Length: 62
Image 1 (cartoon, helix red, strand yellow):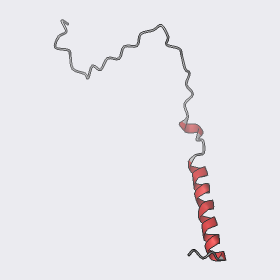
Image 2 (image 1 turned 180 degrees about the vertical axis):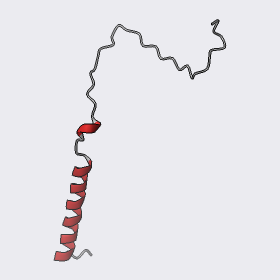
Image 3 (image 1 turned 135 degrees about the horizontal axis):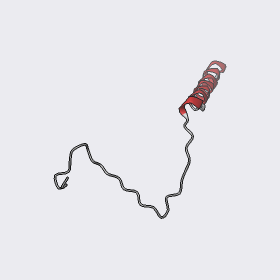
Image 4 (image 1 turned 90 degrees about the vertical axis):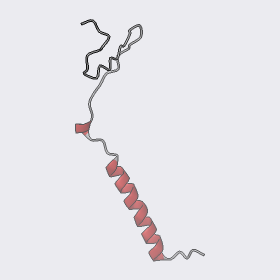
């Protein structure tokens, strides 16, 4: 059986308030961490990703 007295209710409310406050602090927007970007359309274009790894290709004639 759970006994609810004034001290226990105060501790529970304090824990809830501290957790909400710490969540608010952790999720605040930091202006120095954000970088503005733009989304450009890539429809009709070909994107080639070359993972060269810094070693010349053995099959290359160059």
